[in-house]
Image 1 (cartoon, one colour):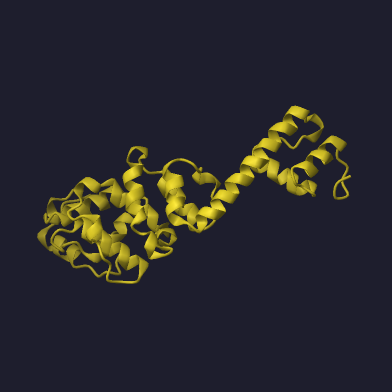
Image 2: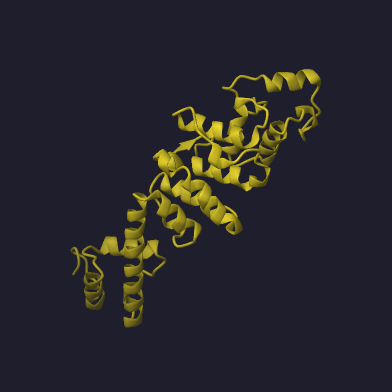
Length: 239
């Protein structure tokens, strides 16, 4: 009997050995790790495999808990593939981990160097902002994707604002806006999952080019382009 429920003696002993006092918690753990809950069919080999998984999961969770207090090591572990982003559930960390996991594996060393520069900014990397509530790390990954088009070095960036959204916007303009021509409402182009063309527009304008020569869904007249470039900061790009 375990928690008032009848279970095979071998299963009850196994549960105790791997640290479960309640059948419901053991079953829940099995389901989380894609392990069968059909206890009648489990063998000694199955129990041994579960014990290994239990140890690995405990070690992984302990590592994540330690890294939560060490952002630089957390970034490195993700970029090196030492942690699976899907197992991170803590708000903030999970979104940042997902963004790093979706980045180009071939440029992760360079991405890690970029993210390291924002570790002194407190929880900046793990905050969310923008129209879709995405992690700031998501936006940083998008900025890094176009590193070849940066007009200024990252290490020369020094934010003026304390607002996480404004800091991100200042960074986007530092990296891509050569002449200060890009309107502030365009900052959100980097803080969304799509479409890519909005980021193309940001880069296009940042290079000092006329918006009318950008690839837009419809041709823009001179007046339309003027109104677009002078839209309020509070507007979305669609508006």
